[in-house]
Image (cartoon, rainbow, N blue to C red; front, side, top):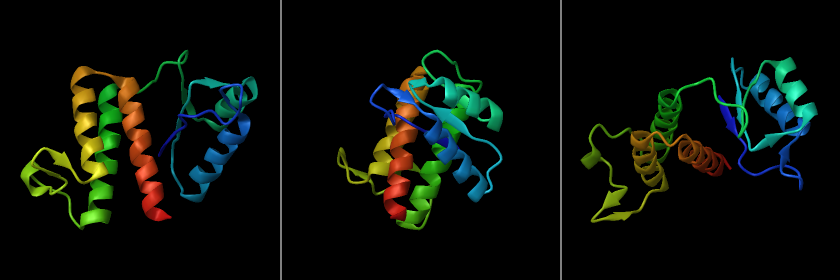
Length: 144
C-alpha cells in the first residue's frame, strides 16, 4: 500500500504524527506489509514515528528508495483495479476502453492513466505521485 499525502494536515505545511498513526492503523487493519508516506515536509515527531513503525518516507528532502518504474507499476495496478470496479473488465487494447472517444475523456481513470503514461515516459516522479494521489482519491470516492 502506498499512502500519499499531498496536502499538509497542519497549517504549518508539515505532515504530523497523527497522519503517520492513521496510516499505521490502515496498514494493520488491511494487513499490508509495507507503507510509503509521501508529503512535502514531516514534523520531527512524525519522522520518529515513521522510523519506529518501519514506514518509508518521501519528501522534498528525503529521496525515494523506489524507482520511477515501481511507482508506475503501482499506478497501473490501481488503474486495473478501478477499471474492473467501474467497467467490469480491464481493457486489453486502448481501443477496448470507452473512456476516451473522439478526443474527449469521459472517464477520470482513463485520463489519469494516460497522464501517468506521459509522465512516466519523461521520468517526472512529482507528476506520477500526483497521478497516484488522484487514483487513490477516485478509489476512495467509489468506495464511499
